[in-house]
Length: 166
Image (tube, rainbow, N blue to C red; front, side, top):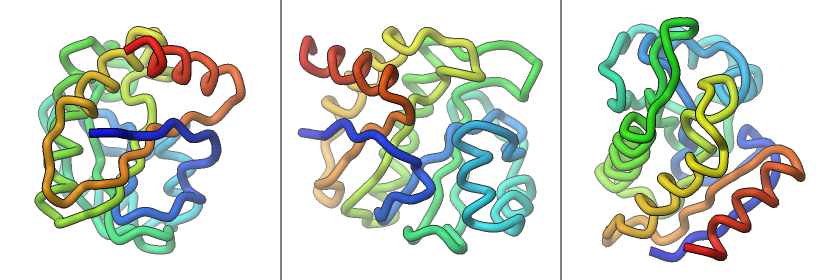
């Protein structure tokens, strides 16, 4: 599947599905989760927590509330905050499961952040390679618009370079 790399605030994106970089507790803390919670409202955090905890690599789906999307897929690429770090396999599983959830929801568009990177401690370049591999390998009849979103200029440049090499 072809996909694009975009820069911006995931909470301001318009898509059928926005993917949250979650921990296994599904509690929405900082980073991507915090941005989504601030825009969507506290109800999204409550809905996510009700579905947790989940296993590492698994996902849960909630309404998008006040976001410009239909759903948020909470992808657990890292253990609960403070209980460890993301791994290549947890990022791979979380990415694949998030894409499958989007397809199961008949979504056409999905926005995916750098799952497992940042707060979760995994190197951005290595994490981006895993995420790009999974997006490219994903075959869906419904998902036609996949966007890999970064927040800062530096993150964008790293991910852009990874996608050009792959």
